[in-house]
Length: 278
Image 1 (cartoon, rainbow, N blue to C red):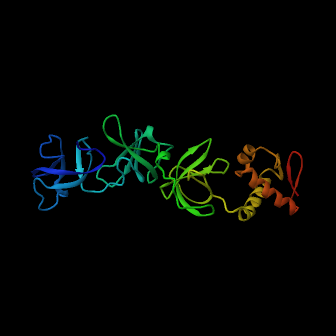
Image 2 (tube, one colour):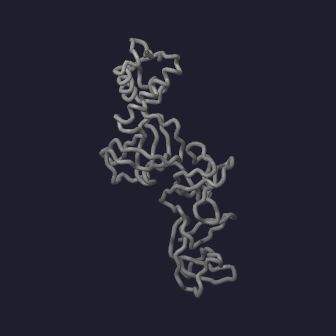
Image 3 (cartoon, rainbow, N blue to C red):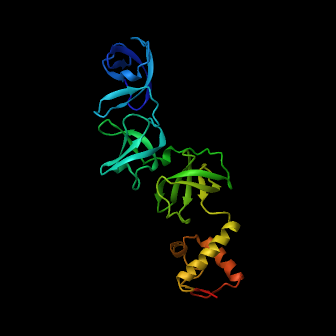
C-alpha cells in the first residue's frame, strides 16, 4: 500500500511523456505519478526509487524526490507564508504549501512566524499541520544541566504551568508560571538559563539572570514602579504572589530581594500596608 506522508521505496511500472508511474509492485493497481522534471535519467520500468508521497493542489496523490521538512510522526518549525480565515499555509519544502487549519492553531499566527507543528492526516485524507500535541513528542534526554544557557522556541502557554518551550526544537522545557512571560508569543525564540532538571528529564528555565545579577535590575524596576505610584506602593513584600506578579512582573522572592536591598540602602521604608520611597 502506498503510504501518504512518508518516504517509501516504490517500483517504476510505467513511463509516460509527463513522468513515470510508481507502485508498490508491478501487480499493484494503486499508482502514483512522479513528474517528468524529477525523473532520473536512464530510469527503466522495474527499477526501484525512494520517494515521498503527498497530495497536489487538486487533491491527487503525487510523489516527489524532494525531501520535505516534515513527515508523519515528526514535528519541526515551519514558516508561515500566508494567513487566511480558514487557517494558515506553511512552507515545508515542497511545491504545495502545507495547510494549518484554524482549529489546529494554538494562538494567533502571523506571516513569517516560525511555529512548531506536527504532520497528520485529516478526516478527508489530506496532509495537514497541527500545533497541538507537541508536548508528547519532545525528548526528555537533553544533555543540559542546571546553570546551562540554552536556546528554545515557545510552543504553548498554560495558565496552570507557564510557558512551554522546545529547547533546540527538540527537548521538553518549561518557564514556570510565577515568572513573567506575558511578553512572549507562540513561536518566539528565546535564550534562557536552566534552573533545574526534573527526574523525568524535563527542564525548568528562567529568562532572568542569576539572583545576584538580577537584583540590581529588579531594585531599579521597583523604584520605577514607586515613581508610577507617586512614591507609595499600596502593598508590601508580604502581599500575595499573584498581586506582586500582576503589579511588578516579578516573583515574590525576586520582589522581596529587591525590596530588601532598597531598604538596606535607605531608599525606601516598609510599613504594614505599603512601601514608601524616601
